[in-house]
Image (cartoon, rainbow, N blue to C red):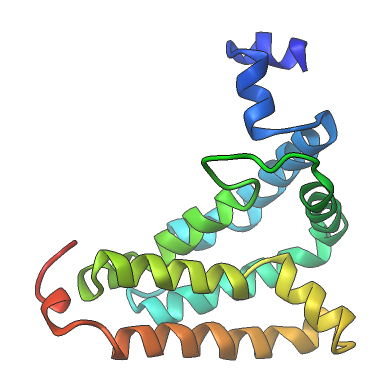
Length: 175
């Protein structure tokens, strides 16, 4: 970790704030490289300006990508759960997911208050990623192909509900 901190020109303490172990850092870095080619293009060049369609495209892309990365995802979940000391002041993992969700929902920002937007992002963090796939596999016995339409249904329903509940004044003002 000292060598990595030196190469990154940050303190070891900074590295440990984000990555409690070398294994955590290596898994996260590997996932970053893998996701850059599979997920970033979907978010960067969406086929629609409709937030429901955009979030569905993101969810489906992540689910397809999960076949390749699930073993790393389970390892990262395990490391996070087994960590002795929870990191204070920020997310322990999943920061890319949050950024992708916020990007996909960008057209909804002017329709939702800041609080509504943040609530929607948080709700979607539950429905997008490895965790819902693990649940559908481990609890329901479904494979990725069977899980994809279920998760698509769920993310679309949550975004549609949030937009339907949007505060009328928030539709006319950016937050």
